[in-house]
Length: 349
Image (tube, rainbow, N blue to C red; front, side):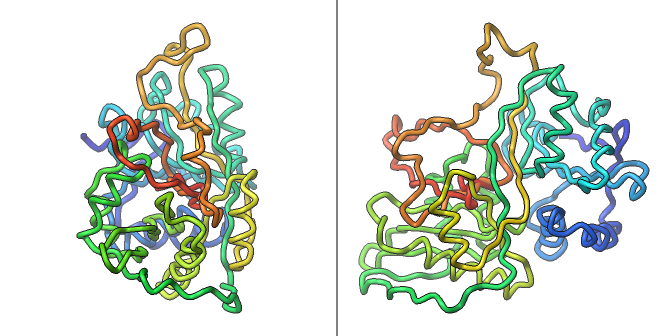
C-alpha cells in the first residue's frame, strides 16, 4: 500500500527524527510508555517497518500517531489500525483527529490500539456523531522493580523452560487468538530479536505455554494449553520474561482487565503497579450499521465469554495489546485453542 507523506494535520516522521522524538516523549512517562518503547524497539531491533506521524506543529501540538503496518488489517489497509499519544495535560490537541480526513477514513471501520482513556474519551466527543465505539478496557501495570523474593516451585522433571526459536513460530501463530490480523512473519522476527520463552514437555517437545516481549515493550501473549493449567507455568514465565525485559533496558508492563482480580494479584506480587487506564476500540460508522446490528464488513471484537476464553488459573491473560479481538472459529476447524490470558489483556499484540 502506498505510504501517505502527509495528512491534513499530520506529517510522516523521518527516521532521523525518531531519537529526538524519543527524548521528547520521556517527559510524559509513564503515559507515553507504549509509544516510547515502540520507537526504541524499532530503532534497536527493526521488528517491522513502522510508520509514525506527528502534528505539523510538533512539538507545539504534541500528538503522534502510530500505524503498525505489520498486521493483516481488514482490506489490507494499514491506516485502518492505529494508536494515538497526546499528553493528557494537553488533551485538546486530540481534536485535530476530528478533521483528519486524509490519513483516516472515518466512514470505514477503524481499530484503535490500547490508548490512554483520556484520549479515547476525547475522541468519543466527536465520533458519537459518526458511529459506535466498542471498548475493551484495561489498566496499564508497570514494573519499576521486580520482586525477587518470590519462592517458585521447581518445574516438574518432565518439563523445561527455554528460549523460543523460529522452529516454534508456526505452532505459536496457528494457536494465536488473532492470527487473522497478525502475519506469521512478525512472529518470526519477534522470536529472533526479542525475548520469548516457552515451557515444553521433554519427552514430546510439546509447547505447553509461552510468552514473548512485544515490539511495543509489553509482556505479550501469555498462553497456556488447557491441560497444562494449575502447574504454575504462568507465574514462572512472567517472572523469567520480566527479568529478561529489564536486562534489555526496557520497562516491563502489562494490560489487565479491571475485573481480572487473578491477573492483578499475580502481577502485583511480581512488583507491577497500576499507572493509568486504557482501552482499545473498534469504531463502526453509522452508515455500516443496520437495525442496531453491524454489517459484517470487518472482524468483530471477541466478546464470547465461554469457558475456553476465560483467563488461566495463574490469572495472566493474553495481551493482544495493540489489536482488536477476532473470533476465530478454530474449534470448528478442529484446532485446539490456547487458553488466552491478559498482555495481561492478553488477548494482545
